[in-house]
Image (cartoon, rainbow, N blue to C red; front, side, top):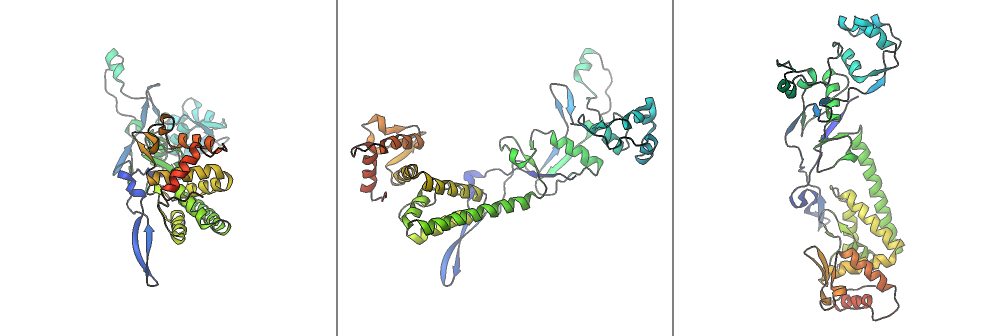
Length: 372
C-alpha cells in the first residue's frame, strides 16, 4: 500500500486565489471575455515539514498505532521457516516466542513490522528512553540512547512526491507517524483548515474528483438549458441576481443587463474552472430549486438583493438596515438579511395593500427596479 500525502491549500489575501483571471480574446472579429483559473497555489505548510512520532501526554508514551491487532499473516506457518524467511535474530526463539506467535490468528502491528524488518522483538516499542521525571526522583541516572521510534523522522514537501509505502521499513513507520499527527487529516473530507497542514489523499483522487466535477457541470448545464426553455429571460435575470459568485463574492448579475449577458454570466459562473467552481454550481442548483419549488421565498430573496444593490437596504456594523425606516424601529434595524426576509414573508402572506411588504415593493419600483 502506498499513501499519498498532499499539502492543504489555504486562502490567499482577499481570496485572490479564487478569482479567475479575465482576458479579452478575439473570436470571429469580436472580443470575448475568457476566464481562466489562477495558477498560483498557497499552502498552510511552507517548504517542507519534518514528521516525528509524538508523545501522548495521557500515557507518557509515543503514539505509534503499532499496538493495533491485525490478522496474523504467519498463522500456522512453521516457526523455523518464518525465522529463515525473514532472517530473524535468535532472540525470537527465546521462551518459544515465535512458536506462540505463529499459533495465534492475530498479531500486533508492532510484532509484524519487527519481523518484516528482521528486528529484535520489542525494537519498535513506544516507551521514552529518557524521562525527565525519572532523573528527578533518582529512578534513572544515565542517559540512554534514543529508541528507533524516537529517532524516526520523515520529511514532507510542498512541491514533490510524499508517497510512503508499506513495501519498505521506512515507509511503514512513516505511515504510522502520519496517521498519528494532529496536523495531518486522514482524508480530504476531514480537513479542518484551521488545524491541518497536510491530508492523506485517496488512491485515484484526482480522477474521482474530475469525474465528480464533470457530473456536477453536466447537471448544472442541463438545469440551465431547462430554465431557458421553460421560463422567461426575466426569470433568468432574477436567478442571476439572487445567485452569488463565490469567486468574487458578489451577485452574478447586478444592475440592468441585456438577456444575452444574463445567459453568458450564468453559463460562465457554472463552467469557469476555479477553486470556487463547485461552490458556484451548488449555489446555482440551490437557487434554481428555490425558484421552482419555493417561488414566494425566491421572490423575497430577489427583492432583498435588489434592495441591497440599490442602497435601500444595507449592512453596517454587523447589522442589516432598511434605510427609509429610521422612524420605525420595528422595521429599521435587523440582525441580518435572513431575519428581514423572514419578517417580510409574514407580511407578504397578508392581503392588505398597505402593509410593509407592499411598501418595500413600492420603494423598489420607485428606484426603477422591476419586481415581477
